[in-house]
Image (cartoon, rainbow over all chains, first blue to last red; front, side, top):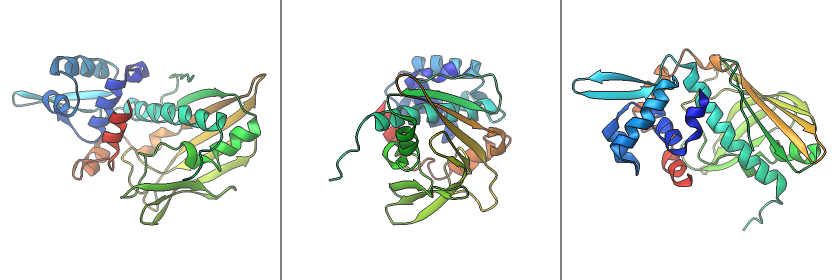
Length: 99
Length: 158
């Protein structure tokens, strides 16, 4: 399930949706990614239970799945993945000189 | 290198191996938290100046912004250097300062010596404490642009 967040672009889309629901066009407008590519990423996120969509008129709006504990887990999984990598770097290297 | 298991619905696990002693890894993870904490992640307005903790059970997990304002966002639950460290996490996924009566999840970190260093295992569990879902978070965040300045930094860093 959380493998869906293994892709950096999908992580970014997921974080973007964490800040509020958006259409495909709005997501594509915020990122250097084409609309078809955004749609493809959203399909993977939706299949993973991380993102849900609703129709609003002719548009389809995507949001972090409000029912989804998977979404919260996905969020924190991503957060700690990033944080632990930074921690390992800090633990294996001397502190930077404060300038 | 990190790995994850997904067998529990309310927990996230992540592990990493570092070429350092457990003592050093524990020290960097706790008292050195400001060296590795993702800078885009903070709960107060403004820029993050410092993240820190009070090194004893019951101590605060705190952050300070560039205006000098300090906000406690968790409490130290376990302080057993160099093997175990745990703290409560009172921040929702919206990254707002926690309410006084906020319910929290829990982060437990263990440090296990290996032949070449230390294995660090992190479990963030009781995630269901953050509510039934993201609806409240979404409403709270949607009005003022969401995570403070973090998305752009995040995207730039990828």
